[in-house]
Length: 475
Image 1 (cartoon, one colour):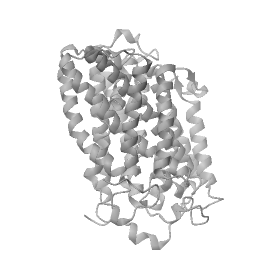
Image 2 (cartoon, helix red, strand yellow):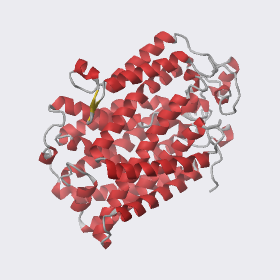
Image 3 (cartoon, one colour):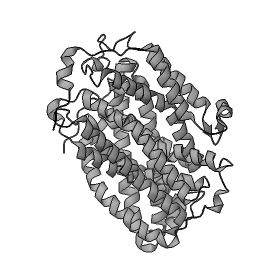
Image 4 (cartoon, helix red, strand yellow):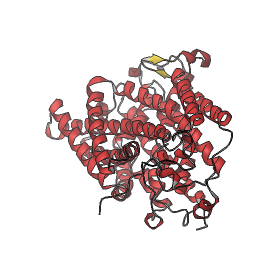
């Protein structure tokens, strides 16, 4: 299969051969990995019982999916990735806000996936062949996972799609075996080792779990969905079918692995750590399937994230090729893996990362969706590529390539979100107004959206000549 040559340029109609089923496959197959499974461990580690943990994940995922899924329709219309598409609202240079947010999101999730997958692999190999759990072992395993991830990401979308189709079937089978393997030790009681409710009370802790474990999953895709839907043609597939496929893919791709993570957390009594207890509680016959899940699943998920990072860096540095940008971010992600392994606990690192990025990313997503609704999905695809061609002008040029009202609105929303966030090592001053409950994503999205509606009362209209080519046709 040839290496993908496309970066964030507009995908020609003849190359837009994917469909809604491919979208479901890639969202399901790439997420059935330990990097997503481990988020199901967060609610039990916060001190919640089984039903409270499950409800927090389900509620957060459903709400997050409802808010995030419509973003998939934007790249269906623009034929480029979401950060570049956001130039319609932020300006062709201002869309760098989306590129940076997307880069940070993908960087964090890539590092997390390799970190957790590598830790489980070392633990399993220790039980199988006596591999010592030392720095050399972790370094070799992390390096192998990173190298395999880079290979898939550099070859591009078609390779990742084929890999996701295989993983959707294979990983589902491995998780079903996992339920059988861990079922004898399953309990619905809260884990006493967690030390009670993390935030002192049930509802504050439940809401934290809803955001950190449930809502964070869909929010991670606010800049990623367009990487896949840009290869779907609106001339052959309606917006409704693409939207339904996005809902289905996100719900299955996030709820299945996360609820498996919750289930195994109680079965393995994994309160303070996930990887170690998961390996220790595994019956001998499930060690090889667990090793396969940790390796193949991690490569599939991290490869998709790394692919997105390469596109975002390519959008920031137009002179860099997609392949060169992917190699660069792979090195940075690998460094982050080692920093996370040696300098932080999994719970603190994951909680801080997802809450901070959710607070910063939500207002960007809200502003982009408001712009999509205002222009009714009609964009000037050529004008969106001005910055990538190192040119000037076009209807999205605004002021020197920046739309000041949209950028200011995002900054206000992000600032409010950061002031209202509750982290293990930091509490924002606005928490006193919300009774100590982390409502950072709600406040950041609300403030960003309202500010944009007030400061930018009208949308920038694409020329009428753009409309016929971008309108949906029935299948």
